[in-house]
Length: 311
Image (cartoon, helix red, strand yellow):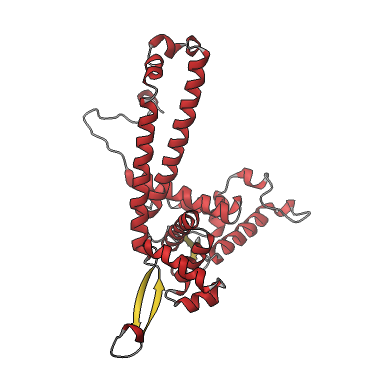
């Protein structure tokens, strides 16, 4: 952190400052999108996306924008770090050293086309700005990242077959049990059992469609669908509850070790941990491991909240 003497300007001591939370959300969102490209394609794809986001960082004001400022593959190639050419992510043809810059531009253009062709929506062509302009498609990425997180939650909580049914319903919108059975190739008895569990959890709902004008129950067929926005809200509440439980667990773990915390707060022990005996040192190690696991779990849940709520 720079001290006041290192600054090129003077800070008025009477001026109040506040944290720019929106800028933090934008930075967090950009890092998540770059990591998503790395996981889905490769490291260079993440670098290319990061360059698009870095190009427009000063023009992006809120995290819920639909698109980034547009740019061209040539401009992005000029922004890439030199080490990208030496770490082996981009393989050039033999004898291409004389045209290295042209080869880089061609390779980056290929990555841009690849990112634009991916159905999750990394990039979108912007024809209004001219030929060859692309922008990061925040709107589509936002939707797909939320779905990815939601599907991961369903898989972890209810199993792969339930997640498969949810994906089919999200893709086809509304289906009967028979249609679900034909598409998923899961036995109808298992489908009914899994749909019941998902219905109780509020992940799927039923829409009754009358076959005739009398609207009698025996003259109707039932369509299953996923109320996605409602599921997101329920998932957010579930995450908040889990974070609260983790914080309570952390408090309990620390309270159980009041005697140890008292020793650690002593000035002599704080300056020299070796004053503790071996049993106390082992207990400090155990406590730190437990607290670290809790904090890691909370950090992951915080990321999920930001994707669902702030993107």
